[in-house]
Length: 280
Image (cartoon, rainbow, N blue to C red; front, top):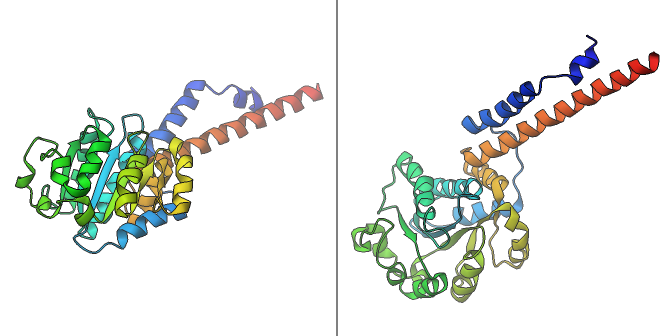
């Protein structure tokens, strides 16, 4: 069989296996392929890096299962940077009652254990909070009341040393870190908390939302922002620890290279076939 026929008759199962391996291997073991860091990502990193030891970061992780692969790595990278600097994290969610609290726990607790940080002392998960607007307004002056006085497991906040110094957003929170896919989301935090109190607001958005926040970054209302999985990968690079964001970008990059390679092979086969037909 001529070479061009072999090129044009590659078993599709081989193609599927190649693409599957190209996508799967980097997800299991991130390769850390080179990636540039955008100015918006650098602003997020620099803001957290500028905080003095002991500062409190208030996290609102507002995502569902569909966008969790983009936004969960952002939270993990934040935890790694914050714990390295001995900062405190108070996390909550306004978006997904069923999944949000568990996403927070799964994204932060492994990093805390790895870095010798303790739940209730160095960070806390307040879980899902209803009636976003009312909750946020209340937390400005009375954080415990806005949080219903309990963490995600229903334990009273008085049991946790971290909460002894977090009585209000106005006095005790240094930065708000919001990860968002819709409403409630960054607009609520901006309108009801960041603007009235002057607290810096940063975080990240799903890629589909990212273009919609650019004007707020330019105006300074958002202190940088992470865009989708690429933003998470960029943040991981600055933090110095490739994670699921980097793995996802590696997987996409290798997958694209495989597809491009197959297109080139197909075109070479077609050209050779056409050339052979002209000679007949």
